Each structure stands twice: as structure tokens, then as C-alpha cells.
Image 1 (tube, one colour):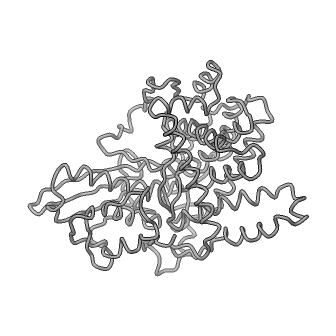
Image 2 (image 1 turned 90 degrees about the vertical axis):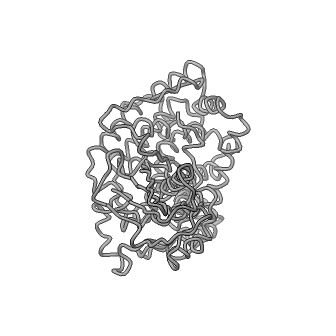
Image 3 (image 1 turned 180 degrees about the vertical axis):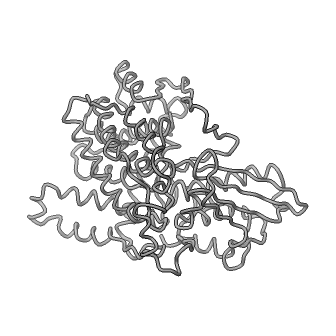
Length: 477
């Protein structure tokens, strides 16, 4: 089982796999580098980007994320308002202060290599970081950013030609490798999904620590929605996409007490749209978000949680904790048995996963049984199968922002539909997850975060010539 501490991470936009993961990789490289040589002995650093990281890395700020990581910043602690000043010495002075300790010459045009036509064996998102000392000693590491901010190095990567065995999880009280096992554990011990996950988490952490982390995640999600509703303007990157959440918030706030709104049975949908747009506009602007389970799908779970807070009568902090614990179980199943990476399986692995997680979690909040929760998760995945990842210009803006709004509404509908049933469903959640994995394997690479197919082919017509291929500076939050 993947822990809440791993699945929900506080990071920066616009992408968990292309921004957060590469920054984490740079942090890991610094840690391993210091064990090999003194930082003051470094004369040169080189960065190589492969596959999807190279194809859409400039729009996703992959290069600047790595540079920020090499400066010593981490995704969870960096002040995104200061990004521009952190990067200024690199771009204007062509110097890099490694870990804030040792300054070396660094030219982004010569020391960063983009190999978009080369895909390394384990995963489409790969990067190599290399340090060369003053006496010619070379040290390098290759990392894979496998989605949701998760990073592994080359040595830990499994041979892609081998069968992927499920991890051993016998150490937790209630182990499960698939949805069938999860449901059986809930039935055998008369537990809800959130209770089972909490018991497993408490095998490694005390309950107060788990609750404090869950509360901090919810706090960041709420602040992200708030910031998204307050900030307007144009998103960076050259598409000239106008932020809509601010205007929509003003409209909905003004209409809240009007009779026509009070009689509108679907008014809640407008607010759910707002919550999702607000988060993903913050993400697209390089702001602070929670991977849920990825940045590209970061608006769905916060939007559904805000729906619970603002439109359901039983809202409580304990309910939020149950929601996130339940969602963790579903996200864990999908990540273990398929993927949450858009570069690996398309957006079905991002928005589809988030929709399934939110649908199951909301079903529990609505007093749904574990069977009904898994039914809601299956609905969420099934009706996102085949969803491509084709961001225009490699930017997490079009269609990503609106796609989160649609995913949030779909998650709510999945929960309501499942709770009206008896928990039985023709296609099991395990079958839906396996189908998503197979669909991703069959999907053409041009539809998997490479900006070479689908909606992304319109990039050449929409991005000003001067902006094409230019790295985006996400400095305004």
C-alpha cells in the first residue's frame, strides 16, 4: 500500500512528473553527489532530458525545476513567489550556485541537452544529471520521474521486460494488492475503507501524525482554491490563456442569494467547476498545489472536497480525513497495478485516477459501503478510459484546466450513482484498472504527453513564433 505521505505531496506547478519529480531528482542527485566528492571540487554540471521530459519539458518548466533543485530548493518548501530571483543568476549571469555552497559556470544553452526522440528503457520520463570535478572525475545518475512526484534511480528501476510482481505488504495489519483483496479485508473485519487505511498508516506513524498530515493537505488545498479565486490575469507560456476563476467567483458570489440561483438545482455544479478551475489555474501558474495524485489532475479531489464542505450537511474535519484516507486506497491500487503517469498511459492515468479516487471517497462520506465505494471508483475509471494527454504547447493549460472541472463533476456523479445502487457492478474495479493499463500500452506515444498529437498539434497555430521552444518562467504566484 502506498502511504498518504507519498501519494499526497505538497509541491509546485505545473506538473508532478515534469516539474516536481525532476526537482526531487536534483535533490537526490545532490545527496548522492556529496557522498562522492566535495561540492567545492565541482567544475561543471550537465543535464540530459529524455522522452516526454524533453518533448514537453520547456512548457512544464522541467529545466528550471531541475535548476531550482540543484540550487537546494525542494518542492514542498520553495517560495514560488521568489522563483524569478532564484533563477536570475543562472539566466543572466550564467552561474549556478550548487546547493547554495559552490558557484560554477553554467550555460542553459550548452549544458542542458534535450533528447525528445530518445526514450530510455524503464519510463518515458527520464533525466541524467552529471557532475565533473576540476580533476576530470565524472559522476552521474539517471532518474525516472514516474508520475505524482515519485522518482526512482536507474539502479532501482525494474527491467521492463520482466513481470512486475506486487510489492510485499505483509507488514501492515490489513494488506491488499488489489480491489478484491481490499473489499474482502473490509468485509472480514467490518471496516470501512478509510478505517482500514488508517490502521495500516498507524503501523508506521502514530494517529496524531497521520491526522496532522491529512489536515495540512486539506489546508493547502483550501488555500490553493482561495488563491485561485483571488488571482486573475494571463497564464504564462504564450497561449494567452486568461484565468477564469476570479471572474467566475465574482459572478457566483453575486448570484448566491438571488431567487433564480436558489431555484437552480444544478447551481452546485458551477461552484464545483470554480473550485477545480481555481486549483488548476494556480498549478498552471507555477503555484503551490497538492499532487492528488498528480499536478495535472490536482483540482479534482479539492473540488469534490469543497463540494462536501459547502453543499453536504455532514461536513466535519474528521470527514475530510476519511475522504483522503479512502482516496489513498484507490490511488494506491491504481499506481501499483497500472499507472498515474500521463506520459505512460495518457490522461486516463491522471484525471481518470483522480476521478476514481474522489468518487470512492465521496461515496464513503455519503455512507456508502466499501462495495459501493469501489463501484464509484470503477465508474470513475471506466468513463475516462482512453483519455489522451495532449496538452497544447506542452503547457498544463488546454485542455487540462477544464478537464479537471469535468472530472470533478463526473466523480460526484459516480459517487451518487454508486450510492443509489447495491454495490454490484458488471465490471470490477480490478478489471477497469487492468483495462486502463492495457489501453495505455496500446495508445500511440503521440497522445502521451509528447505534444505531438491530438489537441496538441494546434500548438503551432496558437503559440507566437517567438515563444515556441522557449522555457517558461513560472515566477508569478
